[in-house]
Image 1 (tube, one colour):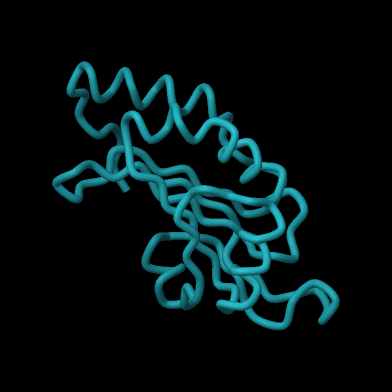
Image 2 (spheres, rainbow, N blue to C red; image 1 turned 180 degrees about the vertical axis):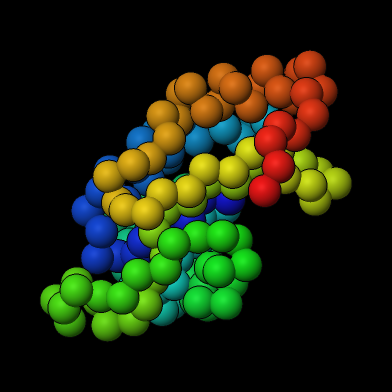
Length: 136
């Protein structure tokens, strides 16, 4: 499971990732969990230390990688927000064979999947070997 967050500057991301961390044991029963942003290493390390997150936290996502995932890409509104381009949130469930099970992307910080509902749906899809739905 890949979760993309906006970066250290986003308080909504922190709340979402804190909820993810609280439910991490349930998630890791069915999937590896990786979280990534465009932040530099120092910002990611500071977030992980401040919040005590247990999931794998990656950094340095490029604009090309954001676009390849179909994510919305934003420019900072001011230097107080951040200084580099960043992606808006996204969630991607990837099957062991590398195919996509589910994608959820947002064009702003306020729209996030309900983690409990998402996990329940993924368990159903895995247990019942449901095919990928929809086409791009």
